[in-house]
Length: 589
Ligand code: ADP
Ligand code: ASP
Ligand code: MG
Image (cartoon, rainbow, N blue to C red):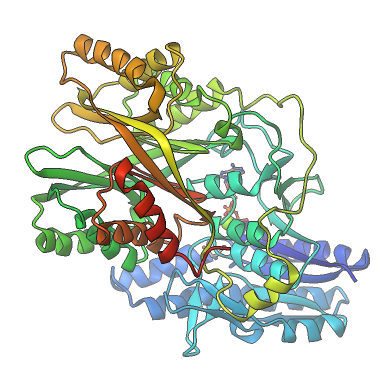
């Protein structure tokens, strides 16, 4: 018998009438011959309300107790949903995370799923019942309640769909699908018919709140077809599958408005210091993004990165310790910043996206304070007040409101998805463990660094346009956050066109009256590929540590959910590759 998992988010179960509406959708699926598992969130804004109650008592509540508190929201909804189904004449049973057997690790408020037992759900389904599962929660080995992080019910739903080998996982929400960007911010955004796992994962982790990013890790890993659709209509939504909607370079853009930028200023420039900093942050399970290290001046460098603003207090606590441990000068941070990102699989094979994005932003006279790129995304940090305007400019420059020609057909099976046999193994342990697909070494690159470019609107646009006009295709780009009116830009290019690129860089620095470009004619790029790499906070740290232990200095870093790349000196490339292969031997697929 086919099996379908349906998830209803907070607004979709906000009151008893809406719960009845959701119950009717579940009944319809059952009447069409499916076994049905319904996953629910807490009603409306219940979780926010519960958190604010605790915050009225203290701003540092105990995290175990926070989980007990927050999980109560979903417990209310499962009971009401079961009551609603029975009132409509259907057999149903509610189950908490513990009753199902959703085992997690011990990281309260951000727990990861280790395993899910299917026995109790299957018994209920075989007895003809609709199973109502509480989203967002599990239990650890001590039997304590844990939660999966805000928005985590999506992850519960897709994980249940994976272990039950469901035919589809429907995510019912207050929008009728995934849009090219948040339609509440830009009404001109377009609903996409389908989006690839890789693009959705990146967008979700860069601020597209429609899906919890970790749910897409599951979907990709286990090949679950996810259908995002409206709770309040029957229209077709968006399929999240292996193939992108079209081969356009950009599939969507996102803004993360709750970001903070931190800089550790004056870090003694020796191998291992960056590693130590990120190891401490990873221990606190804080996901960093946009990591940028300045070129060392007088033996000291600045290391900047962004984090979700909700982690600011915790990160400052960590940085205060690290400051003393490594003898850095001071901590600098900025709260009201926003990260605007474009994402698309087509970027891998089509150039020109970066300069087009920077130009669109500079036309609005908006200053970009940091830039990082990876194969399928480009992120720019701007001030919070410029966030929506930046998003609008970027959305319109890539004409995301228009339906692309040559639409692809949905391909549901993911190349990387784990086969049935492996699925059984995954059920036993570490469902959410990291999976690494490959580790590669690219020895065809060179790096150029402009140590002091003016920190003002239009600089990045001008630079990368001039480089593109010279027919040069740039790979990684990072721009550090400005200090005393100056910023630093580094990028990598193929070695054979180094001289050509240097000519352009020289001309520009002459025009700007700034320091001459520096370069390294032979850099190697080490790339680890997998799924959910950025959200597994320990991975970048393990890469740094492995390389630092091997006395290999790291230069430019680029992180995304799908890959983490690090440039090193060419001479260290082969050694670095072997060290990384050894370090990750157990996790390579
Ligand atoms: P739920 O409570 O159902 O989980 P969420 O509020 O978590 O709902 O997610 C739905 C919201 O996500 C939408 O109302 C929309 O504002 C926001 N959103 C952000 N980015 C996107 C996007 N790219 N496409 C659709 N919705 C988006
Ligand atoms: N109720 C939880 C939250 O608000 C989980 C969820 O809705 O997905 O974050
Ligand atoms: Mg949600």
